[in-house]
Image 1 (tube, helix red, strand yellow):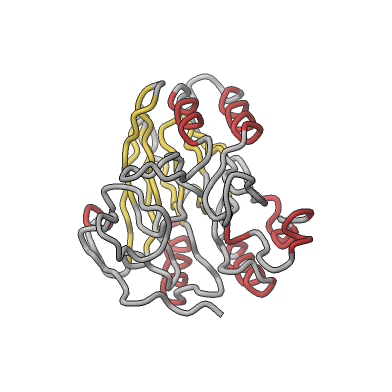
Image 2: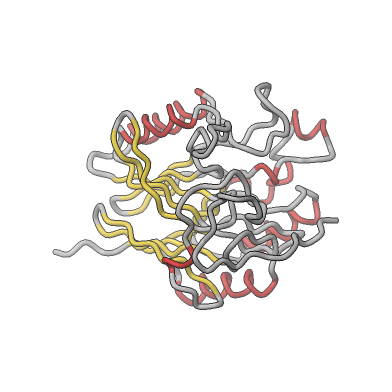
Length: 288
């Protein structure tokens, strides 16, 4: 008997407050019309973690009416209210708190969260890049180890896990190499992430073997080198097929970047990864 394909929508970096209204309506209509098995949102629901941005984000997510798991992005922790940032960083998620870092169990497949966003990082400032704390990693590994035998896992996080930038070794995700090796040693099909606003599908070599990394683009006006998009994932057995869906009908191969940049800023420095479509804005839209 042929195994039923599982179809997932992987959405990231919606950035309410700087959202692309046409793109979010299109994505919402796609969910309503096509009814994927689940939607995985890998962080940055908002632009500045303001209450009005969270209200809009939560209303949009609640209207999806399919299983949803939401990761927390660095833009989703309060910027201006330091008390909330350190003592109640998830308070503004309360309308969808049951979806935050939630595991989704599907036939033979589980979506397992991995927290990469922290309130502060003593190693550096600003705190926009990732940190996989040992506690967060152990929580994810424990969840994977508890899955029924034969269940495959997709791990969802906000930040891509590579620890160092390739061209100069600059620190990106703290403890990322250790986390990647640990996940490669489990039955993990891929790690899903966002943060950099361009889609990618890359394989990293770790001490425990290869680890596939799949990144989604953005549904915001803060684009990097590709138009707004989300990923459609079709899982059949151990195979994951990725389509970077976008309103401009750009081919998936032309949407995906060949390496990971440091952040979501438009690529204007020599050697920065750029997708073949090279849809680079002249300037970033203003953030108020």
